[in-house]
Image (cartoon, rainbow, N blue to C red; front, side, top):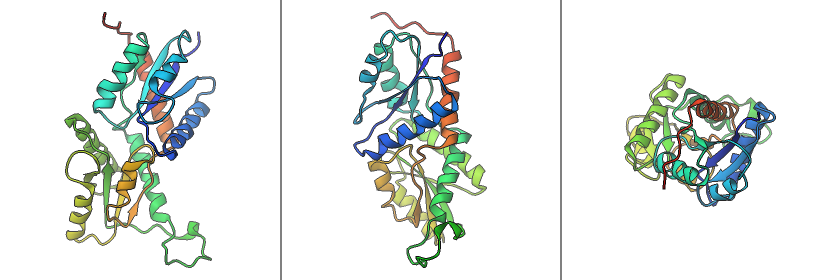
Length: 253
């Protein structure tokens, strides 16, 4: 019997770099598990929509929906599961990707990449790869934020995991919902004496939230997590968890 289809549902963005990052991540997922059918979908703004992708799966056997979301909130707890139940009543829906230690690993790598980038005043003839990373005085976790307290709690849990990985405190700042704002946190750590501040971007893909992060006043802002081997393993972990749970019949309408 064939494995259930993995229907991966990302948030979506008008920035074309966002879906490109999701597609690169799903390519890593396919490479880790050859033969597994992996289908791309988005909750809003990007195509194919969840409805379009689900329509293409009609009659294709069991499906596991994996939200490519980093924590709890409206989209992870209500929007994606509710739409999936209506479209694919027999599908299982996984929990969001984060918080998880694998995401902390990916955040650490993206932060290292940002810190190793060649400063603008470095000699152009010197390859960037040979420049040693500059250790920042402070690292802040930048996140979109959520009006749901559970979503904010998940971001703070992610910051604790990253702090454990970096062996240093990691405060949190938000760019869309919740407090404190990322700008405020960066300014606060500077007042406390940090001269060089780096932001780890707790976002899966580029878009307007990452654009806001780059304007927060930090000295270095890491790229979104994107296509990373640790995240690909995490997607499959959530898929396996969901497929192993007993099926819950859809509520009668």
